[in-house]
Structure formats: C-alpha cells, structure tokens
View 1 (cartoon, rainbow, N blue to C red):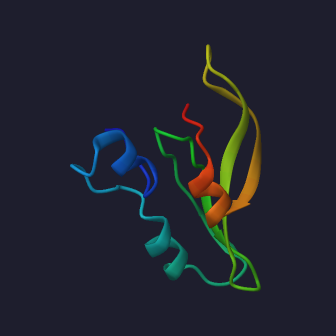
View 2: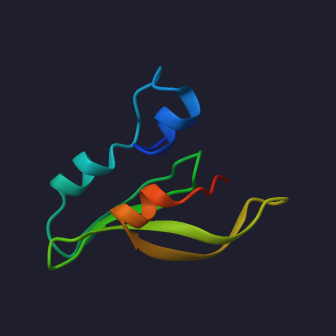
Length: 89
C-alpha cells in the first residue's frame, strides 16, 4: 500500500485520509544527530532527521527522471522549505 506524508496526504486526498508518515511524530521520537528513512509515494520524501542542534531536516529527491522514477540525488531541507516545495514524483 502506498504511504503519504504530512504534506502530501491532505493535498492529494483533500483531508479525507490521514498521513501514514507523520514527520512531526517521527522528528519528536528521534535522538539528536539521528534520522529515520521513509518513502512518501507523493513527493518522494526519503528521510526525517534531527540535527545535533535539534533542527528538523528532511531528505527530498532532486533530479528525478520521471520516466524511470530514478532519483539523481537527495537534498536536505528544513521543514519550511519542504512544505513550500511543489514537487511530486
């Protein structure tokens, strides 16, 4: 079954479906300097991390080849940058 994150679930399903990947709950469960891998089928979110300074960082794909769904690289962004992204895979 496909899983969708805090950002994608309400955008794709118009608030009818709760997110499978709650980035805030994952972040709260992390120790500083650690992360957890995830895979959102909507935007391609790949990981949630907590820095040593307790900042949330999210790994998102860049350079996606849409014909093969291959990711060229990942970029770590803040929660604010992540919410502002308009990219779906």
